[in-house]
Structures are given as C-alpha cells and as structure tokens.
Length: 263
Image (cartoon, rainbow, N blue to C red; front, side, top):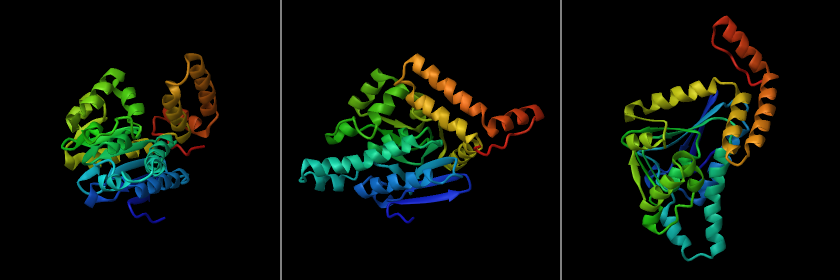
C-alpha cells in the first residue's frame, strides 16, 4: 500500500516504518495518524515480520503535532478537534499493542507527540546529537497527550515524570540515556548499525515467547500478583508446548544458535 506521509518497507523479518514529512520535521497530521494506524495493521498482518523499526526521514524524528493544522483546528467545533487528536492517539495505541518488538530509531529531534510515539515503542536508540523534548506546556497544551502520561511514569516514576512534564524538560541523547528514556545514545554515524543489530537480534527470537513477554510486561501494572502469576503459568505452559521451545533446548544441548520458526 502507498502512503502520502509514511514509507513502509519490509525486508525479510524486519519492517521499517519511516515518518516521511521531512519538510515539516515529520510533524503529525490527521492524515499521518490514519496512515500510521493503517501501516501498523499491515505489519501486524505480515506473519513473517518479527521486528519493526520506526524512524523519521531527514534531520528529525518527529516534531509532534503540525502546528499549522492545529491553528486551523482552533476555529473548529470541539468534536472535530477531538477527532483529530484521537486519530493520532489511536495510532499510538496500535503501535504499542503490536505483538512484535518495536524499536524507535531516534535519528533527530523528537518533541511533544513525537516523544509519545518513541515511548510507545519497546526499545529506543537515539543519536547523541538529537533532542527529546516534553514541551507541551510551552504551546499551552497539556502533557497528558500521545500516551506520555502512561509511558513516562513507568520509565522514570511518577514524581520525576511530573517534574519533566511541568518543567517542559528537553534532553539530549546522552541525558535521555542516563534518564532511562532510551536504551543507548550513539554517534549519529553509528545509529543505523545500532538499530539494525538490535532489530536483527530481536527478530531472531522465538515469536510466541516474545508475544507473551510483551503482554506480560505491558499488563503487569494493571494486575495483582495473583493475576500475574496466573498469566505466567498459562503463558509458560503454552510456550513449553511449542516447537520453538523444543528447538531452543536442542540448540542449547548441541551448543549452537537456535532457529526459531514461530511454531
């Protein structure tokens, strides 16, 4: 499928999704929100894809909402404004719910909703020269947007999340890594290799076990210990019945790398 605001490429087991509005710093529009949700579903429907890399074209990752579109919306009825906001938020949710690992390759600045997009991914690698900014308040918007108030407290704790959002804090890559917002910050010239190596490593994992792991971590804070232990018992039993588990045991005994097939 062709997109106006995105590029989706699938190479063997890894899909690469690029926000493609470099002339507007890859800022989000209603159209991009709809296309992003559609592209995520296309990745979900591709059974051979085992990892997704999300990045931005040009010098930016994503500058958040397109302010020109938001300015036009200021004279619109509240229902139309909410529909525009929901188009983007639904894409965030779809990205987070993918059963495969999702890597944010943060090649340049990520601000506002662009940060939410990055935090919705499972792992993040960032160019050391890039910036990550929680600057909602600087344009009169709430930090409760783009999933940020869901993801950020889970990464840094509620008190630190409150401080970051109220202060409109901006981090460079190294500071974001120290804060725990990204897995690592690398020199811009090393970003492709870092993201590709991580994607290849994750794509080589056992898909069924990976899916259960993502579900377990993502839902754990909403469950009691008893509920979580029940989930773990069911998930581990299901994994033990798979051909991938048998292959993993054989590979361990034979001292070789396993070849998982998602069965």
